[in-house]
Image (cartoon, rainbow, N blue to C red):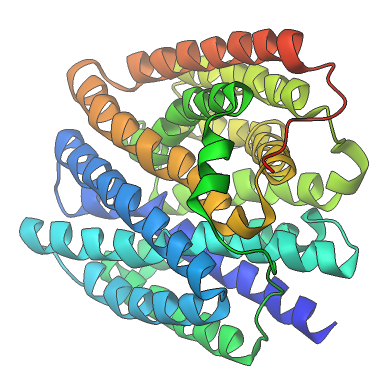
Length: 386
């Protein structure tokens, strides 16, 4: 039980760091006078870094059969680099420290999710009962970050980020490592995993749904400020979005059913479409903020179903790597396209056209999910790699 308490605490703190980094980095860059195109360039280039670093650390974790020691290293460097990032104003320094933070911070996500799922499974509890604390941390720290940035200045985020990071380091230090598979790691099992047509189509579905979600994550705060909203309102926006996830993750044991993942994902994709389409027509920043409560019908449902599906088909010894692939698509590859193209669309046509564009992509994701459900949805047993 002590391990569960520590892991829940780490989820709270780590996803709190993501709240400072993902939605507030674009706001911080905007505060430093960068254009949407420059912001898109930094976030997009960070996606390229994530593309390299997440598989790298996932493979290291699988090969060394330890998640805890890898997390200790990553969270320590992230805490230090986060301070320098949010204490910088030079464009070149912002690029440098942002890229380094992408290198160390983003790989923590799939490793943490792997830890969550493994420990939940070994203790006979639901994944959502642990992941709920991540959503709570994202919500609470978002609200605090908006307030801190508004009242103490943008550079105050340096102390907030590094302080939370060092507390997270202490918690991981106190935790035992996760149980690992006794099976040997082989390239053959991973090749078998990728040779499955259903798996490849599923990963394509994740990518299609992830692009509009990442565009929204990157530019929502900037758009709210353009409409006249404050950084405090940006913090409230992400508090409402992440706070709405809590009940969904907490009740995942009730609504998340094995063999129904694809139809659940199609449900989430439909609400992604509705959410972004409505966002395009709102001109009041407060209404746009309140609309983010629809997050409870989108990301937590989509991501929980995707993780469960992945863990049912990936070999046990490649779970950390498999989780990395999922996170890589959602936060890395999709982030590159979302940031570069999203920044270009925003800079040329404005926020309304951007949200109409991402709602269209979400609609495509919904249709693709329904097609996959029609093809594979009635299979009771998914193909597993031997």
